[in-house]
Image 1 (cartoon, rainbow, N blue to C red):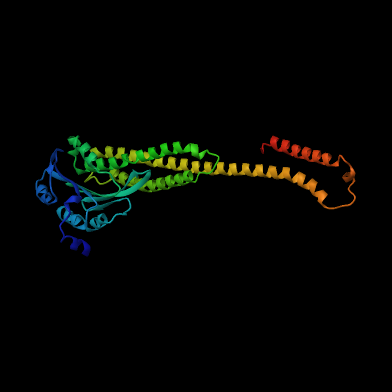
Image 2: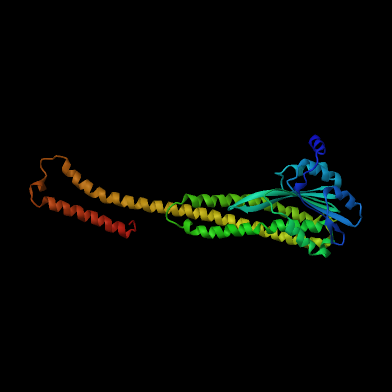
Length: 337
């Protein structure tokens, strides 16, 4: 904890504060405030605060810890990214970690959001690839009758926004897979196609590892923590649960499709190679017949009856042509050519 104490001596960087807004308990927006104004706002009994941060430094987190009496362990986790998806209870507050994803240049970039939820505050801390939660905030502000239920409705808006941004990623991958089908069924091996299929499968596997634990987190919010999650809001969290379930189902289906696509591509390439080998073997068989026949005449035997006949050479050529022709017809019927 010495790092946290030392960080408190440094002033926080205001550029890391994306939003800091005070609300009335009736769901109406009061005004934008600064971090230093939080304590004054919380002195009023009918208010709560929603703070949005992006990759804050230690001093800013320590300042928020002082304002909201956040638990030391939760603040320590929020200072470091690469936390597992989880929900933890600290007294009358919750600390939630969820994974976020964003499609950048055809690849998935992952990030994290750490959420502090109390009776009178909601704090979101974004790390890595993550879209701003301003749309979620605006959506919540359009329904003040639900925002009047408290910061937990803002938590619903953030989680719903995170989950809804996962489905377009799966949809984009599905469309790309359809575009790759022509290359998948090509007769020749395209290394770029196989590499892209592998990259997509790897990204979707990581996406599943990020999305699957969210089901447990949201399931806890649906069933537990009645002091922070009103009963009227549980139906909304069930809706988020349904969405994340759809994401996991879609990711699983896409992974199976990608596995099948890779297997089909490799099977077709193997089949094409076998066809080439069959043709090479057929030509080798056709060349073996004249080679065998003509090799007899390189053994320098004295008594070979046909050597003294003028028709011997054309006869041998005819026999060779008949043998080769017979082999060709037989291989053609066997579909080796």
